[in-house]
Amino acid sequence: MAVLYVVGLLVANLTSWISSGHLLTLNNTIGNICIPLAIPLMLISCSLSHWSTGKALKCFLGGLLAIVIVIVVGFYLFRGQYEVREFAQVSAVAVGIYTGGIPNMGAIAHGVGMDQETYLYVTSYDLIVTGLYLVFVIFFGKPVFRKLLPSPTQEQPRLAQKNTPQPHTTMETDKSTAEIAIPLLLTLAIAAISYLVSTLLPDSLSTPILILILTTLSIAASFLPVVRKINRRADQENRQTKSFTMGLYFVYLFCFTIANACDLRQMDLAGSLNILWYILFVIFGSLLLQILFARLLKLDGDSTLVTSVALINSPPFVPMVAALLGNKDLIILGITIGLLGYMIGNYMGLGIFYLLINI
Image (cartoon, rainbow, N blue to C red; front, side):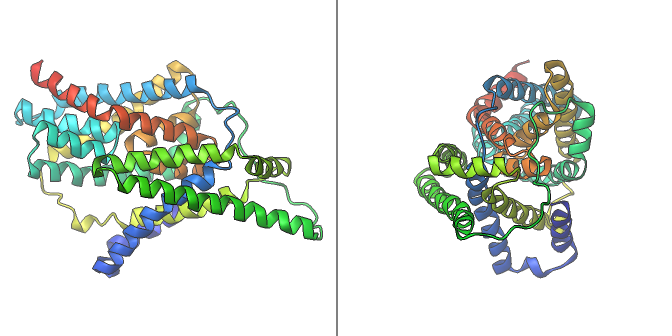
């Protein structure tokens, strides 16, 4: 995964082939397809037996509180020569980005009257800093979070040990084919339904609703008797299901396309640097504060890392982190937290804006 991310960054910044309009469109299309296929493939193989609503709520509240505190503190540290109202707009949009995502960002920017130039600065710097944050997560997130916080209490998925190869019978071959075909057909149906519904909605709602429908239908599919039978067989053989493995391949491709879109040469880096320092402070400051809250709440490192990514980068990045940690059950936790962020992001952003301009 890390190798693909690095290769994508190198291709984007050291070559010119991706600058072609057709190739850039192809790159974006592939990236948009990967997650609607990866989420169902991976969630279908998940079990809800160990999932805790209380734990999800603690993770979400800890992450949300960390982000809000750092955003308010950063407002006073980095406002500089900006007028209170103007930098309060930046703070409001930051709340929207790092609790809900891009849909909330656009809605809040419009709601607080942010001008186009400031909006472009915020979006450009956000791409740079969240890119750095993602590099940190991929290369250092797992060892750092597991070092600073308790290990997960539930057993991590393990790969099957190598045994002496046995000849495959016709029945085993049929079961192996069904293990691939059934989840794949369900995934295609879920992705198609989710996409069609999302196209009927306004742009500001299409992404969160798409993720919500994908997640709901995928979890429902995991309870189908034929799917549970496939998952039970994989557990008995101490291995991942083939649907989860297929989902991983789409996650790997998603990593490459995301990195391939980070062309630093096309970004405006000469704008207001106060906004850049502010966004750096918000992302990495909230990360440190979230770790502190996680220790107080006795949350494990894997859940805390997934929570951070779900809020900072949004739910589509959750399967990538779950794959990195080797724990597929974290996908449900991360996507739930991300969706909660989508739901309250606009309220939080506008609330912070009016709070700051009236203090």
